[in-house]
Image (cartoon, rainbow, N blue to C red; front, side, top):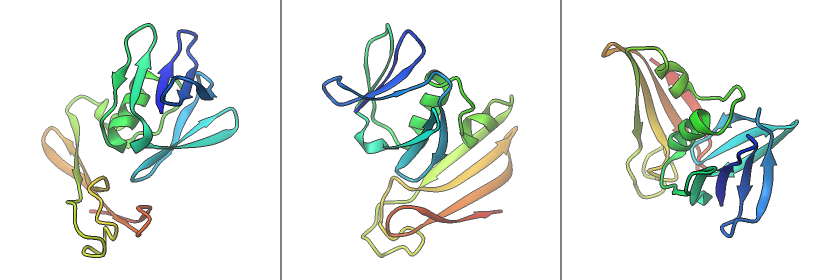
Length: 157
């Protein structure tokens, strides 16, 4: 699938051939973020999108850009370039303050069932988000998942 921002401001989700699947209003926003997918809220409806199915993005009239990234990469891209609504992004909201950074660490790929906090063994699952101000650690969020790669526990330290 491809995500395209039209010159009208609307955003569309297309199949790989460019056929429209879903049209989002210009004020759509990212409603929630999971380990491998996001939900986009538009016109009273929520559309789930599996990040692994996105092959390209485009902001008209610019050229199409292949997408090879993880959930946080897509969230940041959509928040910055595609949606004017109130996008969910703990990463970019915190980063907007000068001197702040967020470090993202992913689980290592393991055999399923090896790590109880990451039972699927996926290396696409975020392990920690570390929030820093001027290089000093403020808080760390640690994520645990179930076998379907849905977050089941977030520990803040």
